[in-house]
Image 1 (tube, rainbow, N blue to C red):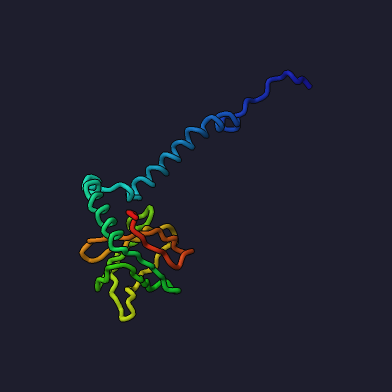
Image 2 (cartoon, rainbow, N blue to C red; image 1 turned 135 degrees about the vertical axis):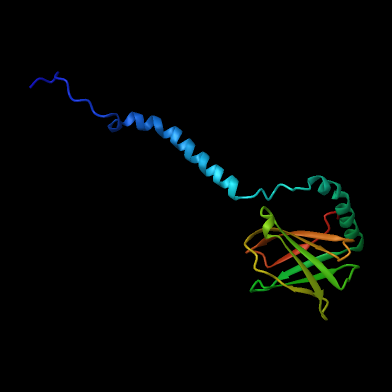
Length: 169
């Protein structure tokens, strides 16, 4: 048999090189479509609409922290075993009838919570708590008039308590 005889050519789609060359552009189109879908379906929660007003309010925040340090205000927050109640013990020269407790999620503003705590006969402040997903939370405690504020970081899912202090101390 003659080995130099021409063979029938194989169709292009049976060759590996066209597929290898097309894989890069196809992967780029798929990645672009996925990126577009993420951009359209998820909001930019980390971008503040009123960033200028927030920048102007920084001095008021610093004044509130300084006021908390001057009063010696500190807080100790305890979470119930089932995660449905929160209790706060307040130390220092302030004893309002109510307190406001903010939970700010590190990356998802939609999960933030604001609670009003009432004082019971034992001197503790209590309120019911909606279940919180695990993660890092900034906890802010302030009086109803917003004259002082203390804060701390809580790792939900692993910490049962968090201590709140003035950042100005």
